Length: 177
Image (cartoon, rainbow, N blue to C red; front, side, top):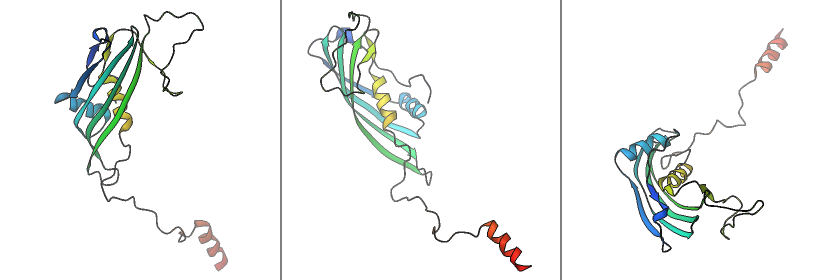
């Protein structure tokens, strides 16, 4: 995986009204091939989401989406192609940092539903790449050990039957003399 994102979809949050907006984000053609190389999978046959944006204040926004991606990976046992579909909800709280003027020691209020690990994403300008959180959730949702249907890992031979150790062989040779 490289640091350069394989796909971008910039959106100006400054154009967002209080009613919010729904934006369709889809990758096609060369973008799908770049995403596959970036994520180190055999192929990405589909990648898209309908992104819902809401403006809570001049410097607070939220993003909700349901990512749907169709990928093909190599089976870890047989190396045959394994097709799978990823369906993943995506949520981000966004805070524009250059407009936030807080007093020292003052904290920014979080969404009441936010957990301990859900901190707002700080952005430094109103042009936000809608593809970035989708790509992040996509790569985290990829199965690291895909297996073709019905394929099982071969287990080791019966653990009760162990090969004779080299030391016991030497001991038996010593006993012969």
